Amino acid sequence: MATFEELLERWDGEQAVIRRDRESGGWIFICMHSTKLGPAAGGTRMKVYATPADGLEDAMRLSAGMTSKLAVADLGLGGGKAVLAVPQIPQGEDRRALLRRYGDVVASLGGNFITSSDVNTGEEDMDVIAERTDYVFGRTEASGGAGDPGPFTAVGVFHGILATVAHAFGSRDLAGRTVLVQGVGSVGGALAELLSGQGAAVIVADVDADRAQALATAIGGSTVEAEAALETECDVYAPCALGGTLSAATVSRLRCRIVAGSANNQLAHPEVAELLRDANILYAPDYVINAGGAIAINFLELNGRSRADVDVALANIGNTLSEIYERAEEEGITTAAAADAVAGSRLSEARPRAHSPHAD
Ligand code: NAD
Image (cartoon, protein in one colour):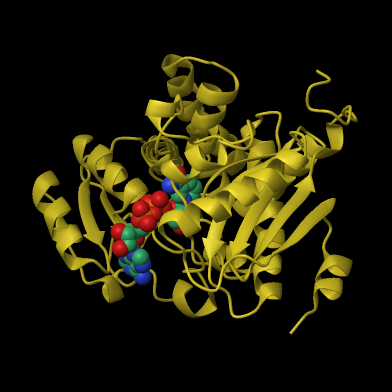
């Protein structure tokens, strides 16, 4: 198991802030992977880890993913991520007290790190953090925030699926196409409704069987057992639950032409992108197709842009994916490599920015 020193030594990010939170028995990790394109932005994940180093490693890995995601989304933001590694998920006043202490750490970074919600944190938690710092987004609508990012993410994934279907089948028409949505929570539920509204046959799978059945009934779709999702025949497999579902072991079980969903870190290893290509499965790179929530929060809370502007930007996720597919074909590389190349060129073209986010 790696130590903090080993993790810091091999990480390619700019700055990691580590605070032992004695009051909760936990740790606060804020990783600013890159500020080349702007302040490091990323969600705050609250989670129980086997060791504190596992929490730091998670924050490092996720912050690198945010750098790529925000570079491709072209939002003038760098990549970061925070992890609150706790012995158990706190509730009530203990939770609020932890979030306020964390808010003080975010405030101390003077705007070089800005955050929003992630696994196990939500809009109400962002309101608490906002008691201590202005650099928090995704607050409740009552507090002037944009609310739950899930439905915005779903709209972005929907446009991404249309563009991916168009590339694979020559038409973006969803009538007669079958889409399997794995995980029908905040993103997957809204996505399933949008797809069904455009005439797709939607199959839903969720470990919460009642939730899956209720949604299928509401949209006139069908269900499969959560364990059967990967082997189910469909045109589009949309992973909207957990990351890491695509591995050497699972790609051979897929019976779809497209993988396009919201889950973060869908590829268990980078090489899985090549296995997908070899199996003639068109993969929509996860961090490109799932950027809708980040885009919407940034537009509405940080830049004062309108809902109409958000709609245009979410639709543009489809155009970005089309360009990535064309580039992948022209250069003979995987779609994941083509997305990384877009992110890499944005980062290498970036001009050095002034240290303070207020400078411009
Ligand atoms: P959520 O917690 O609201 O929903 C997840 C759903 O998946 C739940 O209904 C849960 O029961 C189900 N699920 C869990 N394990 C499953 C399994 N093994 N098989 C089938 N279903 C399973 O989460 P969400 O906000 O909808 O996010 C879904 C995914 O998208 C996550 O990977 C998240 O990191 C990613 N993502 C979300 C957003 C956002 O704006 N919410 C943005 C970017 C990426």
